[in-house]
Length: 116
Image 1: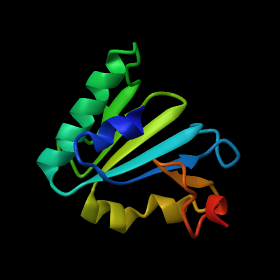
Image 2: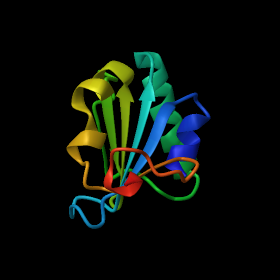
Image 3: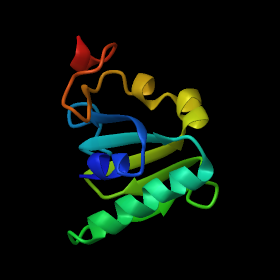
Image 4: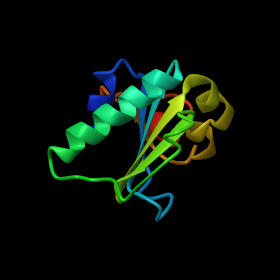
């Protein structure tokens, strides 16, 4: 739901990493990008609002003021909303390359365990 909701605010390059076999930090990472700080904040605000309507509230939110890399921790799901430049720099998809990765449409991505 977080991934789909992010696309409603024109988020780019939505990737879902299945972290269950890789780390105990979370079951899934949802990674999204925005092209500006206002867009990053709009994506985060929209995700929080929509998930709150289902009763889900983040355990914590970090990075909102700077809006370069905002982390929303929902326990089993951690949502990372990046400014596109910071996403390229931190490259979580490569850092967690052992995690199967899928695009929002369910297609496996190339270069990850899920895409090989």
